[in-house]
Length: 353
Ligand code: IPM
Ligand code: MG
Image 1: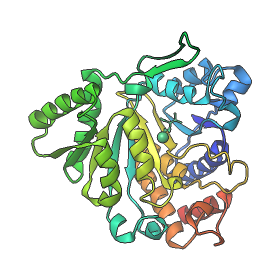
Image 2: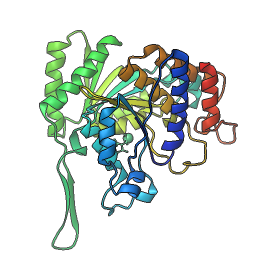
Image 3: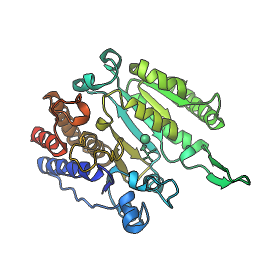
């Protein structure tokens, strides 16, 4: 299922489809693609950022590849609905509670990072962001007070089982990696974080004694991520903290344009997307970096289709293209030559062949 969405979404998704078609040919598979609407374009055409037809078609699919949602056109804070609602709702509808965001800077891009090479080199973090709970989904509202001013609230709510299931997934992943697990919270202030701390601490101790387990407060984590990123392996955290920390971490590899993510549930199709947003400032210019979406397609082949070799083929091809010195606009310094969305995909396809 393809959900191109808004902004640069359609441009990058069409390139991912080209690459997947090459993979199908090369490895003797046949993928069938369906395209549905989500986000702003769905609001324009149906009034709903996630039409029921899209939900139904997604449920029928084996995996979902999403571009981006939103844009200035739909940003009016008083609008009846917003494109982002479509994204939150598809995550919730499909029970995609675990958002995996790998941050492993490619050595070819170390000098694209705003941080010093010696800090970034060797970073290999896998974030597990809780995706269907917390402040994104808790009770919220806005009321007008007697004096005409307003009072608004959003509530962070977590239940034990929501913490347990994401924590176990993260701990299982840590077992297969470098065996270090960091849980990030704000337990010095938030009651919901204190629940996380108790639940995670107990599971770590009882079920994963072989892991090196640590807890870090989210404000300190923001600092450690850019001062000593190589000291982390698997990081698990709640929805909003994960949203913020992964955008921060995305600067380690140099560009948000390089990072894929996978959203998985207990069963059913997974949803794969680049973590960058809709980038309305460059939409339609043909310069968006499609590599995060290609890498998301690789994650999709790996996690939803059990096609490991095919996934690796895409990842290697992307790496080869970068090693050959090809760059998109987001990866070069101002004034340096760069390739557009289609041209860099052509290079990836050539590397695959
Ligand atoms: C992300 C995005 C979304 C989020 C927005 C677009 C709703 O920032 O996937 O990180 O906050 O989850
Ligand atoms: Mg985000």
